[in-house]
Amino acid sequence: MTTPLPTDRAALLARLAEPRKYDIAIVGGGATGLGVALDAAQRGHSVVLIEAHDFAKGTSSRATKLVHGGVRYLAQGNIHLVREALHERVHILGSAPHLAQPLAFVMPSYKLWETPFYGTGLKMYDALAGKAGLGRTEWLGAAETLHLLPGARPQGLKGGVKYWDGQFDDARLALAIARTAAAHGALLVNYCEAVDVLHDAGRAVGLVARDVETGREFRIQAGCIVNATGVWVDALRQYDARAAGKPVTPMVAPSQGAHVVVDQSFSPGDHALLVPSTADGRVLFAVPWLGKLILGTTDAPRPDLPLEPQASGTEVDFILREAAKYLRRAPTHADILSTWAGLRPLVKPVGEAGSTQSISREHTVLAAPSGLITVTGGKWTTYRAMAADVLARCTQAGVLLPRGASHTAGLHLVGAPAPGSQPVGLNQPPGLHLYGGEADVVSALPGADRWLAPGLSEAMVRFAARHEYARSVEDALARRARLLFLDAREALRAAPAVAKVLQDERTGDPGLAAFEALARSYAGPAASAA
Ligand SMILES: Cc1cc2nc3c(=O)[nH]c(=O)nc-3n(C[C@H](O)[C@H](O)[C@H](O)COP(=O)(O)OP(=O)(O)OC[C@H]3O[C@@H](n4cnc5c(N)ncnc54)[C@H](O)[C@@H]3O)c2cc1C
Image 1 (cartoon, protein in one colour):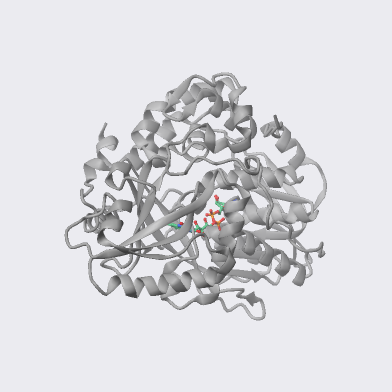
Image 2: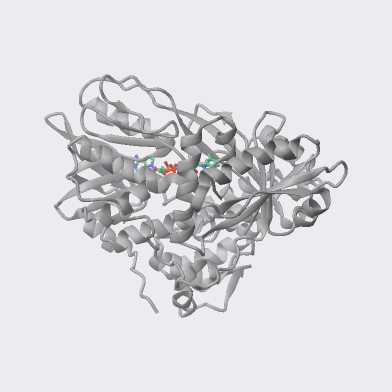
């Protein structure tokens, strides 16, 4: 049995208070920041990462759960981007097979031209993946399509195309990356916000960090500061620029994407459904995930930056309407188990003289005159490649000494099961299998046989508090277990029992009332009125 590292908060804060200078300090504990922390720590740099809320509380827990090359980008002719993501897919799948797995998609065709048209494009997707391919694209007849997608609307069905991508548990993967970085010596602290950038002779040399729970402030010294705060990057850029007395031009134009979760019986089986072109010209997915079905997503500009963006009525109606065109049984508002939304950090062109570098159209890495390195954009699938780009930029900007090449390709994350073991499919309901090689550690904790909700034991909550940085009911039910995203009413029912376990683990105020209000908003209007 492996012994996981403890994540005792007092010990983490005591380390944060030590007077020392880190090679690199990262702000933001989403996929991007955590990826940088892991890569840097693995190369042997001294690393600290602070996250204002919980790890993956931002966009990184709100993805459509696809590890994908992006068929949409293929249609846009962005070959480089697709090829990079297709190759990154295999690294994610190999790094945590219990949390990221291949997934077969079927695109049903209701017009005769669709199968050859989309099929040819998807054959190109295969060709771009080359040896990194997960399976061959196949053209299907109507009967085969219905066999693989029994929930698809049979009237007018002409055939379909089957192709391969991947799916994952985004928040649990984020935690696995965080814990692996910690195992390589990085210090990661959640609920610790960067409230200012420290300067010396115009250079960014540190951060003022505030413990959100107590208000206590820490001064962190580092040679290199990385701003990986997703859609919120402009705030830290402003703190940095204040010292020079020059405002910065905002670089992020956020766009909201919403999801609706319904019972998996609307599209039973282990194949995802792809709608190639919705009324607004996007793709829409119906993805079997942890025993439920995710429908999404949308794409609407959103100028404000809420931490908890809510899916609008228009978005929910749109998703239900588009899904109804392709499903035998149309989901209605009464079928919704949970809704959630996330904000994409889309990058606007930035014109800071001599200081920008666009590494790809997808993500942008920018060095400010102070040496502050900002990274945003991209997608979850390419987090590892983005981290390598960020570290290369840090070195190029002269704020980080080079320390050899990245070794994160082929790395097994903490919790990865032993090679050769057959992981349970991510379309199955949650359970101990999501703990991979650490399942026996969880089973040895008190309460392993006491179930607080389907797939969630008392022992899992204890594990979350002791080894996965969980502080609150929301941390436990939204990102360690995914119940809030799967079934918000079930999460509401489990919340008081989860709060009691956390109190027993002495994590502080478990925030029960705040979680209940949040879960009602995920559950929709009926629960809000209850
Ligand atoms: C609807 C939607 C669906 C998507 N689906 C997919 C998909 O299926 N597959 C895929 O590959 N990609 C997908 N993406 C893209 C992917 O989710 C994002 O690219 C990725 O999660 C961005 O991660 P990030 O770390 O840059 O940002 P975030 O996850 O938002 O992390 C930034 C973090 O910084 C923290 N922070 C902010 N300010 C401070 C501060 N002052 N101090 C400390 N911390 C701070 C925030 O709390 C936050 O946790 C999707 C995106 C959206 C919106």
